[in-house]
Image 1 (cartoon, rainbow, N blue to C red):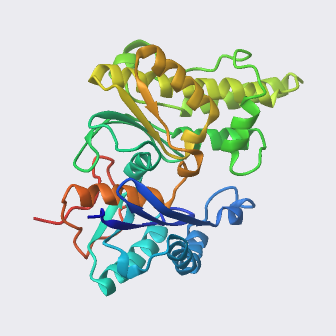
Image 2: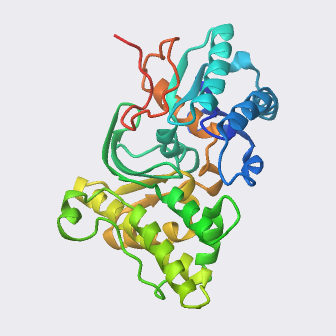
Amino acid sequence: MSEPLVLGIESTCDETGVGLVRGTQLLVDRTATSMDEYARYGGIIPEIASRAHLESFLPTLDAALDEAGVTLADVDAIAVAAGPGLVGSLTVGICAAKALASSLGKPLYGVNHVIGHLAVDKLADGPLPEHFIGLVVSGGHSNILEIRNIATDVVELGGTLDDAAGEAFDKVGRLLDLPYPGGPYVDRLSQQGDREAIRFPRGLAAGKDKERHKYDFSFSGLKTAVARYIEGATARGEVVSKENVCAAFSEAVNDSLTAKAVRAALDTGCDTIVVGGGFSANSRLRALLTERAETAGVQVRMPPLRFCTDNGAQIAAIGSELVAAGLPPSDWDFSPDSGLELTTTYLAPRA
């Protein structure tokens, strides 16, 4: 008997994603984005994002079903991102999911899209380990999670106290007058620079903070250090090497992320680190984490680049984990939760 077919709907920010997953098999992943709308604003405009979801959802859904060669009647369960994310964007996806689930008589799961960033790796690398460390790195999150069962047992070991890694990259991109979004441009320039040319600070890496916040991150001070360096060099009439600034900044961020992720794996007895989130596309993160984990005897699983940003496949992937675990669907009256805790895999029904 074939495994259940799960439809995943993603609308947390500016991507409208629809994915279809059966077990560990991805049938289709279709995404529409409104990213180009925000270049002139330098950031996401929630109202524009919500309107874009309204316009994109049905065409994206139809295209996904056609590509997979299935109909809505073939779907066994529906999963939708319930948070974290922009309330307006989440609302569009949730309303669409509720309408579909109600009309089709299918169970509905309101899921945590951040946990979906980890679950999606099973579509590339097979079933997830029973016990692993999850390193979530994105524009809004930089967290280390200990996961014994991705459907039922997620513990947050640490996270950022201020800026997330992706957010810090975008802010440094603005300091250097790079196009929006700045993160990918900072990454590309960093590959051309000298990582040792400038020594930027590592947050929470010294004194009492080193132990008190051993799994936490702080990138706000690093961003300030970059700003002061640029201001000082400009005041002295020096030409600022954007390549060297990006390389040194990138090294500081990725040094913290990788060192603490590997430490968490060793401390908890995990032999695998699974990485997820938009920032996991960063070239230096991938290289440095692979190098450090190999030295420590820890395996690293990172999804392909196409699964790094928000997508419907990740929502369908975590939905399929919930269905496989035999968990009951969410109550029909759930609402979007922009601050959904990372230890909450999905919005379980009230007792």
